[in-house]
Amino acid sequence: PWTTFANLSTLLNPAVAFPDVSWGLGGGTWLGDNWYVKGSINDANGSLTNYEWLRDGSEFFKWGEVGWSPSRGERYTTNIHLGFWHVDEREEVGLDSAEGFTVGANWTSQDERWMYFARAGWADGDAALVEESYSLGFMRKFRRNADLLGLAVNWGEPPQDELDAQTTGEFFYRLQLAENLAITPNIQLLKDPALNDEDDTVWVTGLRIRLTL
Image (tube, rainbow, N blue to C red):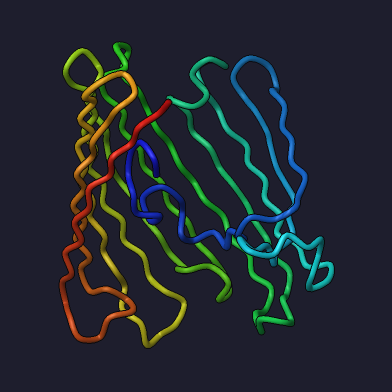
């Protein structure tokens, strides 16, 4: 969210019931030169404002992933992965247990100027934001690989029958003015927004300025 897309439906998979910041334990390992496995277990009731250990009891979010990459050095830029997750019932917030799985892939060109990505997710239960999610997008570097353009679209169907399936499109261009200064205008289009009954289409514009010291 600091350097590329801004909408969480693009950055993450909304069909996963991610907890907020929480205590947990995770790890991973390579199985040879191309395959890897990793996973974690976290407090399902994590909060950005309350860091108490298991404040609502032993209710956990568990997640695991297996993936393939052409090499270990390309694991972040070119890979295919399959993930599974499960979250326990949360009595305090009134949510039943839920589970789901995800698939995703991204490919980066040899000159690292193009990256294409696709991901999908399916959830069983009401814990995740959506029960189905599909995303497609790409990023392209310009001007000596300093500037970056990105375009993505996501379709997600909420678990509540009364809410509409929402389509989210996002475009950004990151203008790198100096080594430590970037300006990124951003445009988002929300078609049939799930939480807005009054408007069929909503436009969101933004401008991010990032200065590193």
